[in-house]
Image 1 (spheres, rainbow, N blue to C red):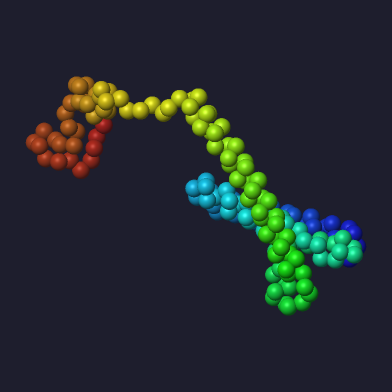
Image 2 (image 1 turned 180 degrees about the vertical axis):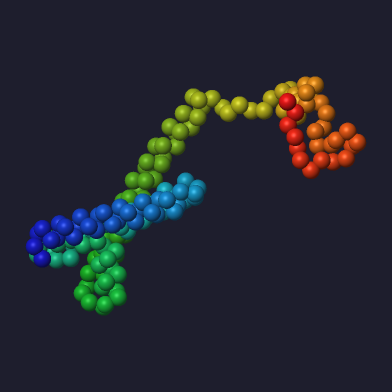
Length: 158
């Protein structure tokens, strides 16, 4: 394998891994942020962490691929090195995420305080139903006709 083939393979893997990460981000978009973000960090570490395959030639490969292939085909002894690299990269990435979350939390609280509290419902304010009942146009119930029978359609009053 020439150096250009090696770089081309890494470029193809990087594009595929970015696509997988994008799909995972779309899949976890509905989750609570405290669960969604660590899961995304873990998946990013699994996809983007390299491990050395041949120390003499400085060749690297994705750690998850090396682990899977070494366990599946029972060849080589790089699985433990790849797992150790995954654990190390995972701890570093989760530590950085925790530091980021710890810095973000007071800033978000300050920003919410600066924007002001959301407008709370004031006890003395009338509800929409009460305001409509005061208006003569909406005083009569439109769901009943002149005989008092219930209508099946609700007609707007103009």
